[in-house]
Amino acid sequence: MAIGVFDSGIGGLTVFKEIRRLLPRANIVYLGDTARVPYGIRSPETVRRYASESAGFLTARGIHMMVVACNTSSAVAMDDLESKFDIPVIGVIYPGAKTAVETTKRGRVGVLGTPATISSGAYPKAIRQIDSGVSVAGMACPLFVPLVEEGWIDNEVARLTAREYLMALYKQDQDVDTIVLGCTHYPLLKPLLQKVASGVFEHPVTFVDSALETAREVKEMVAEKNVPVEEGGKVNYYVTDFTDRFCKVGSMFLGSNIERAELVSLPTWKD
Amino acid sequence: MAIGVFDSGIGGLTVFKEIRRLLPRANIVYLGDTARVPYGIRSPETVRRYASESAGFLTARGIHMMVVACNTSSAVAMDDLESKFDIPVIGVIYPGAKTAVETTKRGRVGVLGTPATISSGAYPKAIRQIDSGVSVAGMACPLFVPLVEEGWIDNEVARLTAREYLMALYKQDQDVDTIVLGCTHYPLLKPLLQKVASGVFEHPVTFVDSALETAREVKEMVAEKNVPVEEGGKVNYYVTDFTDRFCKVGSMFLGSNIERAELVSLPTWKD
Image (tube, rainbow over all chains, first blue to last red; front, side):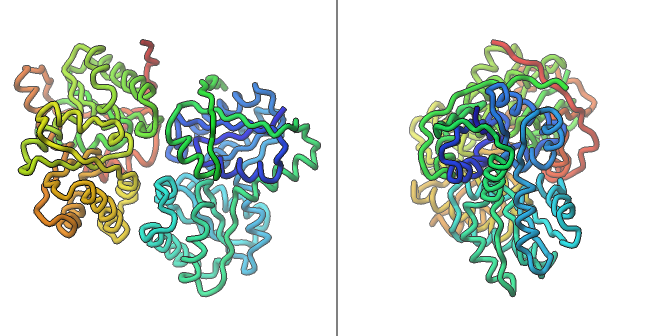
C-alpha cells in the first residue's frame, strides 16, 4: 500500500528525498541492499538477479509502485523487472533523459555517471529513443561517489577532480549545453559542478538532476494511473546489512536523521 | 597442495604478486570475492561470514596454507578463521605491524587504511601486543582506493589528496617516522606518498608496505613449519563475479596480464 524504492545502498535516498518532497503524504518503503553495494562494479547478470531479489522483497510488502533508484539497476534491469512484476516500475534513467532532450538547445547532451552506467550505454539509448537528433557524450566519473561520501563536495580536491572530468567531456564535445547528473550521489556536487563548468565551457550549461526528474515522474504517474498510494506519510527503511555508513551518509543525503532501519534478508531469486 | 590467497576483490593481487616473487615455484590459488567487494563497508558479522565462505572454498581445494590478503577480513576475522581451519593462516595486519615496530626510531607509527581498517583498531592492537611502548596514529583514506583504480597515482588530484591525509596524520602526531600502508591498494601510491611526506614531516619517514611484509612472512612460515607447498609455479584465479575490472585493474596490480579466471559460487557458511 505504498511506494517502494530500492537502491544498492544509500544513493537512492536522494531520489527518496525528492519523492517525499513532492508527495509528502505518501507511505514509502525504502530498501538499501547495503550487504552487496555497489552494483556498478558487477556484471549485468548479477545486477539483474540482485534487482529481482530487491523487487521481490518490496512487492511482498504490497507496494503499488516501484522506483528503481539505482542507476546501474535502471540501466540493465528495467525490462526484466517490468516483465516480472505487475505494477508500474520507474527507473532513474528515462526521466533525466527526457528532461535533457527538452532542455538542450544545441541538441548536445553530456552525461556524468559511474563507469557501469556510462559503459551500459543506457543514456544514449534512452535519449535516441526520445529524439534521435540529439547527440550524447558520456563521461565516467569514478571519483565522485567516494568524494561525496567523504563529504568533500567543495574543497580543492573536489574542484580539481570536477575540472578533470568536465574538461574530458568538453574535449569529447565542446557544444554540450545540458549535462545529466546520471548518478544518485551527484546532486550533492551540483553547486560545485555549476561553478567549474562555467570555467570550462564557453556557453551556459544546464545541469539536469535525475533524482528530481525521477520524483516528478513518480508524481505524474501516481496521478495519471491512479496508483492507490496509501496516505499517512509513513516511512520504513530496510537494509541488508547494518552499517554506520547508512545512517551517517544517509543523513547527509536526506538532510535529516534516519532514526531507524530494519535489517532484512532478501529472498533468493530463481528465474 | 598450494598456497591459498583470498581477498574481497582485486587488491589482494599486490600480496599475491609479492608471494610469487619470493616463492616463484609455489602453486598458488587466488580467490577474489568480486560479487561482494568491497568488504570495508560491511558489518564485522557479515565480513566474518564472507571470509569463512572464501576460506571454505579454498580449503576444499586442498591448500596447505591460507593467506588473508584482505585488510578488512584480517582486521575482524583472523581469530575466527584460525579456530575454524586447521592450516596456518596469515593475515596482512601482523606482518606490517611487526616491521613498523622494528623500523620506528621515535616509537611513533602512523597507519593509512580504509575507514573499516582504521576504525577496527586492528593495527594499534597488533602493534601494542608487539611493543606496548610504540604509539599509533591512524588515518582513514577513503579516496585512495578509487584513485588507484582510476590510475590516478601521480597527478595533481592524487597529490592534493595525499597531502590532505598526510597533513591530518601530521596534526595527530608530528613525530611519526614510520607509516604503514595498511591497504592492499596503497603500494601503487608509495612513490607519490614518499614525495608528499617529505614536504609534510620535518624528518625522514619510512613507509612499510604490508603486501611485501606479508609475502616475507609467508616465505618464512613455509620454511619454518615445513608447509608442503607443491611446486610447479601454477596459478589459478577464481572470482565470484566476472568483471572487466578484475582483468583491467588486476593486470595493473600484477604488472602482467591475467589470461584466465574461473567463475565460482562460494559455499554458504553456517556456524
